[in-house]
Length: 458
Image 1 (cartoon, rainbow, N blue to C red):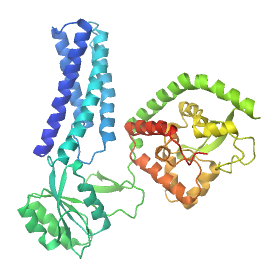
Image 2: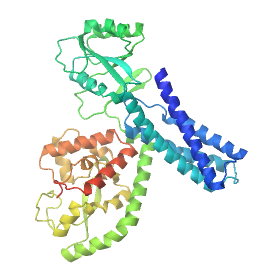
Image 3: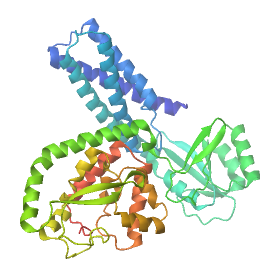
Image 4: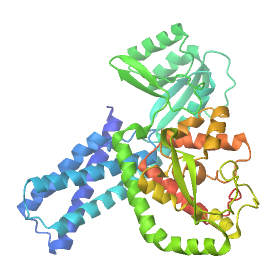
């Protein structure tokens, strides 16, 4: 670990301890109207801080990687918060001590976690701002001529990640238009020796063994870290992950956070809590009202039940409020703009997405999630899977009431294959980048979209 990374780790760890201690003292003051802390509560404070530090190192809370997504930082913090509360509570019960005030414990947990979230958000934005001003950066250069190297350069030129791209080196003629100097590969060694380069990113052909081995030797001799970015552009819509099985590198063509048992547990708990909240506080009074209006305005049942494709492409019954008059095409033909099958009240239900609300029962049952790729009719799953690459990747997770595609504006009728391809890209991106914070973000965007005019809604 270099000095810069160590300073950041110390900043986060000392900052967390300071804010935990502050929350503990505030809770003590609120509970006992005093700051004269007894020995047993000082012992409790030590337990709270030490257990948090251990969890912090375990979850990587103090290792703010330069390319980390903001949602991932907060997601790891949320995991640590849950485990910390469980560990601390379990430890106190195991000690069989009833001498601690439960009110103080509740205040401590509540205040400390709230303060930690605010502190982490502030610190992440502070670091990004600090880096934009030109501090805490790494001096790097790129070697390459492929399109991948240009994309990499554009990423590094975004100063918030803490990289200072000093130069771009090419082995063949280059027409790169970048806001950094471009040189021939022959000038690489002299440039690195004169400019304190810390890392070289090699994005050229890995089959040019002579060039690659010479750069490896140069880096080893000059204590420069070499990072190779192979071109995986042929693997479309994939987030490549490389693991080591012993000393053997193994490439996984898709990194899926929801393959982790703990992540699936967290997502399921969130789904149960969120769906129960909606069912108890919204559907309990909304369903009778919607049911009455549906019955008064059209003939047929209140609920529309349709077989759809779910996890692992297994079929399940998807529930909706009925928005169409009874017809024989409901299982084969998608709703379209000005569809005469849609009732007047049904059109309102569709535009406000109220028709999807019964799917919270699907979520509670366990064949859907609050957030995930939208479930499609069986006919559409079969037909689109035959013409769109990667379409069936959507079936690797539970379908959702809302999803990334819907949150970012892709909803309603799919008029052509391109519309569905765009949705699939968002769905695959969601599967490869899932976090609890991302779910919350997509739910928030969906709610905001309900108050906007959406042209594609039918």
